[in-house]
Length: 104
Image 1 (tube, rainbow, N blue to C red):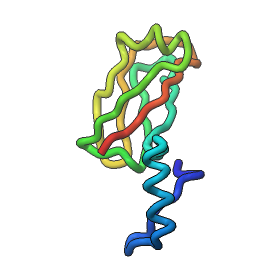
Image 2 (cartoon, rainbow, N blue to C red; image 1 turned 90 degrees about the vertical axis):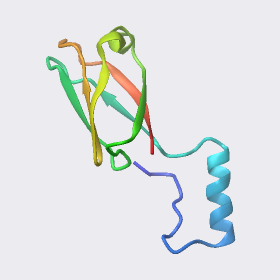
Image 3 (cartoon, rainbow, N blue to C red; image 1 turned 180 degrees about the vertical axis):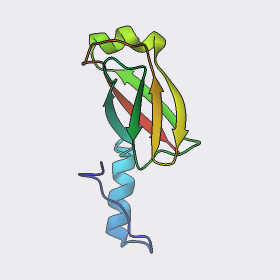
Image 4 (cartoon, rainbow, N blue to C red; image 1 turned 90 degrees about the horizontal axis):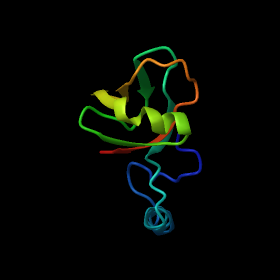
């Protein structure tokens, strides 16, 4: 999930590393996003994400027409360490895809 994004060493980094990470953040590259597709013929979808936690705020946006139609019945029903669960209407469509961000 963090492909293409720099992460500072736990004990700190050089001035160049710190500047690079800060500049990426200023440019909106915070590496806190992902995608999920609602499970077809089911009422929930589990999403694994190492950045998620029990207090995380998860915001999602439909990326397909069928996902946009599903938005009214789609919500985050559970949050846990490194995962969250989406509850949604049972539907056989397999292209209800969303992008999301995790905050905190």
